[in-house]
Image (tube, rainbow, N blue to C red):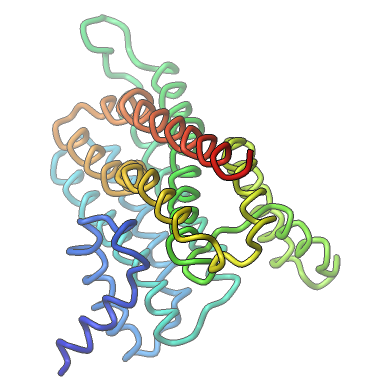
Length: 314
């Protein structure tokens, strides 16, 4: 009975087989649920789990500064547990009904903290090391490389990966099965909040509205297509089955890239680069290999939306 209940809860935590990654389905999510059930029995609030994950992720970043392999192994373990916390807090919030705005803010903030410490550790680790096949130290070049990898490559890859998953879920499951939001609505919420006594709420919606706006600016073909879809079928459930199936057929092959460009592939690359003492490989993979995936994903999605827009609305 306990096993069947666990499997049922685990299954309910998956939004769609289309968008779930194999490693999350078979490893991260089950462990996260086991921790969530433990924390529930101990009456621990989800926000504590999120804060714990932030601390573990930051500590993992520090471990990657050291050349000693055992420090790096500790970093791998700490980052894995930070990721378990990231899975656990959301599942615990659903199990206990303790979803809060503070939790959403902390959850969005957590991975930024992890990777800030990771990139800084790589910068400092590389600083006095020679660039391969040269007599020059990485120095400021290592900082520039990691800054570009973090603020340009990493940020934009995650930005669109998350967006494309939510778009896919909207066409597959409708509004209730997706967290697809738009900047206009978020700005309306922000402007409706009182200027005094709502600091946390205004901070969250201000940043979230800007986040949504960045997603929209990078996807002009989708915005044009989706505007027509929303005008014709305000309720997602009313969309023709043909349109849903055609969009899913074009979007589904891109879901593997949305997964590769988020945490797991990035973390595995980091682990190998640091354990093999070639930490510069990690930001270089971010800048070049992941960028190729990102470009293909972005161009393919925009082409799909342009094609469907012409077919159904022009």
